[in-house]
Length: 326
Image: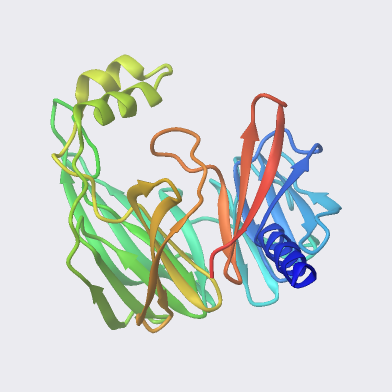
């Protein structure tokens, strides 16, 4: 009996260790974003990308540097997987690399006000700002490989005002892609539209949700988190609603859609999980680390596992936190 109990304790501890790991990364001085695939973990560090093996976390290689030449980035880069390749977006260009970081090709953006691009099939989705004299039109659209608009999915016309007020949690456009599916939250409510790769609406996820109250204490913490050169301007012009939006972020991996809200408990951030057809799987809490009251440390989900880089300021080192979600 004692032996069986000991085996049970050892198995429980071992399972916990498997479900949660913390790995120090001494070679990394800054993490802007990460991408996780079957074989690799890509860590964006300004205008360069570090590749690590996903199984043993060992350094593989580094590619990219600041510049305007082939394979170089003019600004911090964003990565998106595309079949057997890796697509990188900076302010001016779209660059294609192999999965192991070898340069293949690039093209200049026709519209530099196109940003937050992600791959979907052979095309891209993202946001385009159409700047007018009296208004700014924000367009969420499907683009071809040359960034010509194939289909406008959502547009928001924001009339410019002399006051230049900053409205928090207004007109959200949260989206992600996986397996030729597009997932979009474009309202303050719990509403997620699912589109196919051609931008055709397949289904809408809707459910009743009790909004989280924005307290005066929380508003003050948000204002304080913006300390910097524009702090006084932000403090003077920010306008808060009475409640948070229902959804804070959308993530997807090969099997599931993860919907994060602004609610937290002692176990983590409230998370709703759906399959890729929009069928509800479960609600849970996920242990997500925050850089401040709103901003999550860089993270990615792959194969039901959360990968998140956290800045350990005490030890002056970046740590990779690996936690199984489902």
